[in-house]
Amino acid sequence: MTTTQEWKFTAKDIAAKPDLFLSGHRACAGCGPAGVLRLIMKATRGPTIVTEATGCMEVVSSIYPYTSWALPWLHTAFETAAANAAGIDAALKAMRRKGKAKQHIDIIALAGDGGTYDIGLQALSGAVERGHDFLFVLYDNEGYMNTGIQRSGGTPIGAATTTTPAGKVIPGKIEKKKPITEIMLAHEMEYVATATPYYWKDMLTKVRKGLEVEGPAFLHVFAPCPRGWRSEPAKTMEYAKLAVESCVFPVWEAINGKRQLSIPSKLIALAPQKKKPVKDYLAGQGRFRHLFTPQNKHVLDEIQRLTDERWQRLLQKCESSV
Amino acid sequence: MSSKEKGWKEISIAGVCSKSSVGFMTGDWKTYMPVRDLEKCTTCLTCVMLCPEGAIKWRPEMGKIEFDFSFCKGCGICANECPTKAIAMKLPEE
Image (tube, rainbow over all chains, first blue to last red; front, side, top):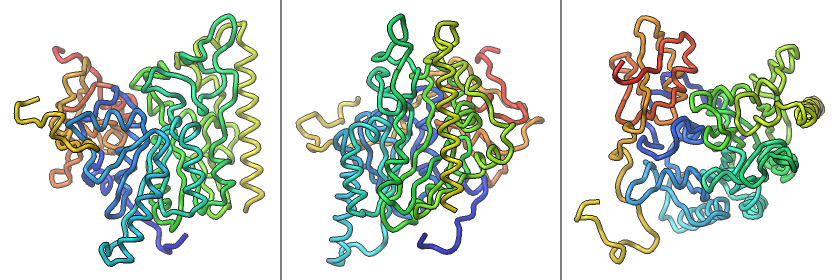
C-alpha cells in the first residue's frame, strides 16, 4: 500500500455524496450490478475516467442519446476493458511528460463476468503484466444476461441457463465456476479482493484501496441478477448476503499476496456454526429449481461438497499467508 | 426524439451520448411502490445505500430521507432489507 492513512467514512458521508452513476439508467428493477456501480462510484477520490466492456451495464447506461455517467466514460469493444485502461494510462503518462496534464487521474475498468472470465481475459492479463495503473472491477452476475442468459466461465455448477438447460440430459451447467481471483493472484498483483454490495462498507473500502495502489488492482464483486437467476427482484441484496453466509462467495483481500478474510467471512470462520448450508442460498433461485427434485439430489450434494472444499482451501491459504 | 436532435450523418463517428439519463424517467415502470412508516424509520440509510436506482435520497440539510418516485422501479429491495420493516410495498391505489 502506498498511503499510510486509511480512508474513514460514515454512511451519511457516502449518502450525501452525489451519484456519479445517475438515475434513469434502464437496468431491470432490482438489478444487482446497477447497485454495485452506483456504490463503487461513491468511493472515487478525485478525477476519474471509467472504461467499460460490453455488457449489461454498458447497454443500460448509454442508450443514445442518454448517458448515465457523470464522469468521462469510454466503451469500445467487448474484450477491451483492460486494453482501454492501459491505453488511457499510457496517454496520461505521455501528457504528464509533456506537461499537458498535471493532476493524478484514476482509471477504473468495469466488466461483467463475460468480459472478464472469457472474452477479456487476455487483455486483462496483458495489462496487468505491463503494470498499468488502473482498478479492474468485475461485476459477476454469473452469465451473459444481457444477450439472453447464456452460460459463461463464471456460471456455477448446476445452474440452468439457455445454453445449459436443465432437463433429462444434463442437470444445468456441468462445469465448475472458474476461480478468477486465483488466476489474478497468480499475476503477483499488489491488490486483489472480493466483495459483495450487501456489505457495502467493506466494498467501498476495497474500491478505495484498489485506487490507491500504484499499479493494477483487481476487485471481484458479486452482483445478483434477478432476471438471469430467475429470482425475486426484492431479494437481490439478500442473495448477496446469503452467498457470503453460505461460503459460496467468501469475501477476502490480498495485499502483496498476503491473503486475509474480511470481517463478514472472518465471523463465519471464527464461528463455524453460523455457516449456512448452500441449500438456503440456492432455494428461491429459479436457475437452481431443478436441483430440489429427488433425481438431482447428487448435484446438490456435489455443490455443497465443492463449496466446503473451496472454503477449507481458502482458510488454509489465509492461514499460511499470514 | 425532438426535431433538434442530430441525424446519423451529423453525429461523430464514435457516438457521443449528449443527454443525461436524469431526464429519462424510469419511475413509470413500477407496479408496487414503497410506502414508509415514518415512526418506524430510524434513518439508518440502508435503503439509500442498497437502492440500485439512486431513487432514495438522503437530505443532510433536512436530516430526512426522500423517495424520488420518478425513478423508483418498484423492485422492493428497500422493503426487503429495511432492518425495522418500516417500508411496505403497496399498489398506488391503496
